[in-house]
Image 1: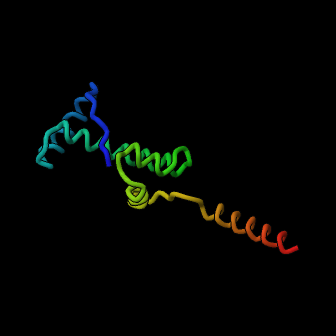
Image 2: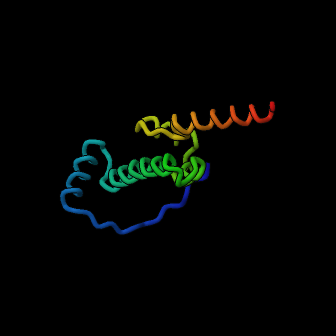
Image 3: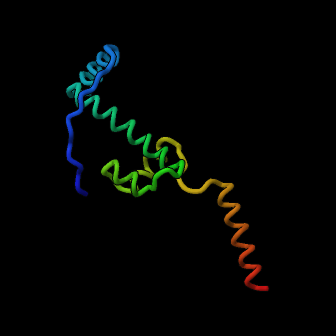
Length: 107
């Protein structure tokens, strides 16, 4: 899978968030910029999964935006207990509609 090119983006954050990023970087044995990028990516994962669950974007588009696979999108959703696909009500309605279609074809 081809990774998207990176881009430098200036970012203004509060001093407390900067302190927290420094603490995270120390604990994770990395630098502050990497800690911030990891936080940003985790937030982006959750946002994309929510967009998919709301039907705003497809799972394949979400995977494209995150440079990941559709399987990753479903795994992220499962980890956050976010349901993707039809709800129970939608499944029941689809079943009823399918049964009606079968009955009208038999008649």
